[in-house]
Amino acid sequence: MPIEQSASVITVTYMESSGEWRVSLTASDKVFTTRAADLLDARGRVDRLIGKLAKEGISGTSVHMIDGSAVAFTRAYLTAKFQTSEDVTHAAER
Image (cartoon, rainbow, N blue to C red):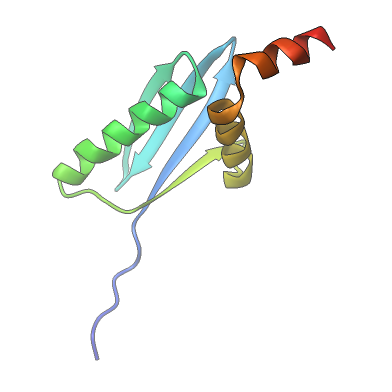
C-alpha cells in the first residue's frame, strides 16, 4: 500500500491598512511578508514569491484570504481586476 503524503498548503493573508496592502505568506513553517499599494500589485508580488519558493522545492496549493475568507479575497480581487476607472467615477458621483 503506497504511503499518502499530506497536501502542502501555502496560506496567504491580505490586510488593508491606510490604503496599503500588507501580505503574509506561510509555507513549510516559513513566513514571508510584503507590502503593496493595491491588491493587484500584492497578488502579483505573492505570485512571484511562490515562483521563487517553487524553485527552492517549496510548493503547494495556495489559499488567498482576506479576513480569514478565500471568498472575500476572490470577491475583492475580481472587483479590483475588472472594475474600470469609469465604474469608480460613477460610484463616487452617487
